[in-house]
Image (cartoon, rainbow, N blue to C red):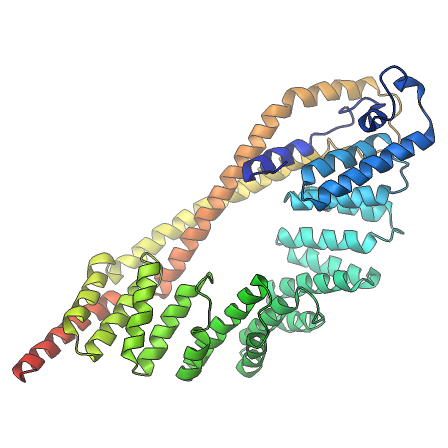
Length: 466
């Protein structure tokens, strides 16, 4: 079944409710059609149980390969509940950890992988489970824990693909922790044929830039820009490198080189408007005013409410003045004056936004704590026991409690997560606005001066008969 975003959240929560009471003891055989309803209770043969478990396992793996992680989990939990002696139980637990990770239930995935590592230390899948654990910590932004798992992988792993991904996650973690030397050292271990090679090169270049080693940074960015574009993922990394390197060249006064790189960036790139703005500035420095106008008019047309619009109108005014098109220059400057607040209003706006950010961040942290408790309660419903045997009365009573609270808990978890996602997006948007406001020049002031200058030059032209 194809899952939409909302259904994923619902079924992810439901997954963790599956308990040892979900199926009758003979459900494993019944699920595969191994017996009919008349003789089901008579079949206890170990071979039949093994055959049935194998069939269910294969079905679960097929679901996983199709991306149907919920259905895969259903199959695997049946085996965990009713046939713990299955000879592929390490694979069952590992796949279940993968499903939880894919459903973005990272706390649950971490618990499952830790169980695997403790239960099956000699399994050939230990390195795969360790990688799953590293990925789960990384996606929770727990970078120190990510690195601890990485060093454990180095002792265990022989698989090159696993090592490459482990190095990538560790390198990114060091970068986030501002350990730039370590980030460079680890990322350089990634092989050229790895899917993480391109992004690793980009992170190495950024690390050198953070260390103020511009020459080394430029070398790596240039290396990325020479890579053949063989996929959409490669195109994105190459365009990121072109944009960053193009802006570096601009700062180094190498304007032609800047134009050469920025003009190659795909118009589908997420930061295409930054490339257009960079082109506007570079062409202005080259006194190529027609190209300034062409690129900035495209920027304003495609991103009329973008963060670069105000600056674009200012540069347009500059180009129009240089070409003697004073009325158009005045129009561009007046847009800034009319549409954007005066600079002295900005600090009060920033204070208000920052106060709002603090309030919302506190709210998000409270929600995270609540969700963590909810996930833990839900995960406890997944049994990891050796022998089901006869169910004691307290477990039967617990079954009733779980059943009665199930719908309420699912609705609560779903609502809390929806609220959390909304709050996080709101915080990101507000943070970006504050950052832009704090670094933004007083384009309004420049615009007011530009209007005066354009009017003066216009009058001078008239007096000279131009």
